[in-house]
Image (cartoon, rainbow over all chains, first blue to last red; front, side):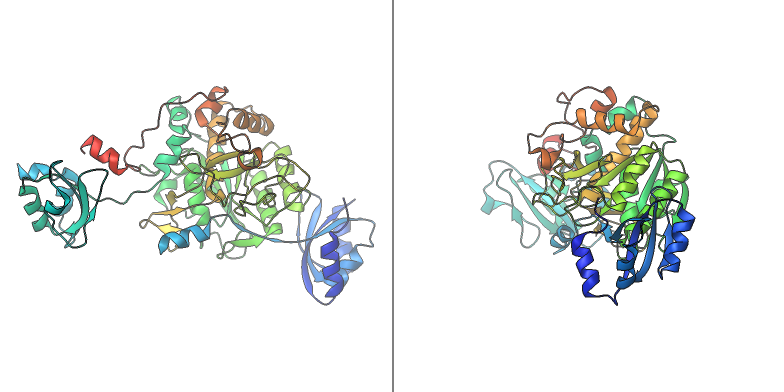
Length: 95
Length: 397
């Protein structure tokens, strides 16, 4: 698995000052990784137990820096998801 | 004699204390009466060709006049018709599993969504726990989660869910606008696993394509590894290929696409394959025009009345699967998620469509209970909700 999606990496490089939400998958000890993320300038939002990962908020520049850490296995955008009701259909029916 | 022509349901409406000034009615005429000679009671009647009848609005007084006319045979109320839970649930043969003694009683089902309205009477005494991960509080301020929960486990007499005696756990991970971050969903998943639920419903997702390696899909697979059946919406980004989004592309979850109660796949239902070439969805379940529970002060979908709303989507198909899983887990508590998934897929009714549109086909509760492949069941008896006009005429009710 790549450490980061190339398209996302390019976006981070183009907008280094942008604040991004990430899910960071880590290797090794979770408390140590959490401390390391904080030390590198990321704000830890949640730590997970179901998978070895942490959600953070940080600048794009910081995110790119995280990629250099050997204990960072992968980094992805904390993407938005939404309900899957068909809103268009409901609107068509209303009219 | 003329009063006999007015069916009791309409007569009762006419006699009600708060009866409207006009009623919507359908008038059946004698076969030998030409359309031009039909007595009418209101403006702009809609004449039918298939049957000697017309729909119109009329006052109670006019209805009585029509009933007294020898050219009129029968007058019915023109009732709103919905495809609703008392259609989709019989369509997948869940009542036959209830008859065998399995209603999902006591099986813990988590709805990871916009929350559940605990005041809804169809969930009375069956919401075991609620937890908020959005900062908005546990209240369902969107309506989606309550609707989904009603499909999976609503206990109403009018609109009964698939597993009407299951226990519900509500993780609010989506905000009032119906969206949220993957990290919030993962947090809700973790909570549900910690609550030791047996089934998790995720009627949510992002835009595809995907290969199942994202964090949310990986977390879903991890929940399955811990013994939880996870049912996930394929998404509404169809009909193009590879439109299933995360977490619908997770390997071990049951990914659910939508079909109608005529077993037709709507265009919105997302199609496979995943970006690493796997077939998705796994099965289809009804997700078109489903009437189920409505949360207080919300207007998701099309409100039917204060307690129910109609909505479509793979969001609505997925809780049919979650309810079905609850039924089977009451009947066969030792089934692993993998066995349960295999059973639902192997007993689904093949609709003859592309595998990346239908998966194995439309799941069937009774065949999954029997563990055998589908043989054509007798047609379901809707019991009053989906009564077509022709059924009304045939029955004379």
